[in-house]
Image 1 (cartoon, one colour):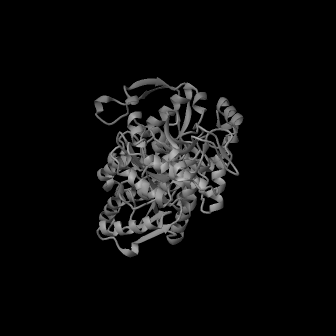
Image 2 (spheres, rainbow, N blue to C red):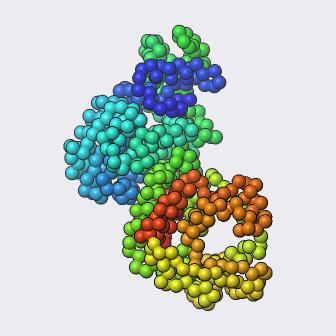
Image 3 (cartoon, rainbow, N blue to C red):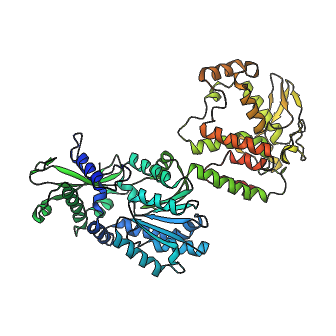
Length: 550
């Protein structure tokens, strides 16, 4: 399909190969690369198309930018380099740059486009329409996307690169090709980047069809120009009357959420390396539309998280951040948060002790956010009711401040690099009170009440202090998962059968993070921050939630 993506195609030979590959396709429709649409004439036709009343995408995106441009600017860190892919004449870009200029006092911009004349016009437009924009902060790069991004990174080796991809251009790529495109973009500039992705949403068919089958016929001319370029590359000179005879047709693919634009040949055409028969169609371009689920899937498969999103019925804009960059930013966000935390013994949520509760839950939340397609663990299915009762009892002891195991406010764990003193407390087999009392008027989750009495059927030992990340990592490294004496028979058999040598939720990503935690815990001063780093769940919403609860 022309929706395929094959990296850079900067040479004529590579493009000729792509044209022949598409036209010699024996498994489906013949096709040409959609990149052939955007020569000088094609770019002019596209500009004309955006001004048509029925072509809603241009106005829809412009309206969304008008509404949310200040919020978008606030999501771009200070000193970032703004890079626009396929900037054309930059008709909407001035809004974004003006907002960044107002937010940060300075804006550095790089426009990437294959058209030199359009880059010149974009430069003039932006200098005229963005107050305070300086000549030295403007660069125009005539290149294709990936080549341009590599040039940007060479010029700005350390800065955060914020890539603007406006105009729903991602819709020209198939689902797999779009994933590869974003991966290649990260390969070109590194993970210290973010992408503002804008694209149209899946709508009623009549609205979509009008946008791509305009009454004036500009879209048809746009497609014919692309086919003209493809045949010219193969050495065939297209007569005007032949080009006019091609029939422009549009199909709606409901399964793939896309419009497919074809040209039909009314007569046979024989070329040295390919041929067209009368009535045969060639796929020139696809325009894929997105649901919210489609956006989420694309981000996850590409190695990004959606940090923020702005949507209405027709258009979606989302700020994508690579997984690694999301972790780094969350680290800095937690640094900033914890610097202002006056007392480490405080409970962010009243009935949850900060260390006992968050040790296990937050890494699990992070894993589920960053690796949503991996099953965390099957261990819960083998856990006995007796063990669940014991675990619940332990949780209640720590979280509710039960006097059986007091949590000292002077706990050395909370102060830094001195290990906490602890001893083992025996919980006997007897009746215990569980849950919270609604009459206390304190915060509690809906599954923590009403209060009830349960029976501990088997006595056990529990530490007087929470097990630290360092302690548990040491346990894992010393082969704790291979020592049968530490586990109940059913659990140990499960570990052995599954080959688990560490918690099932530790992927390679999580293991590397645990190493970071280990280093930080030895160093000491950032014990509390490193604990939260293991949860940096790609979006900063959790840190914000905790801060609000505090």
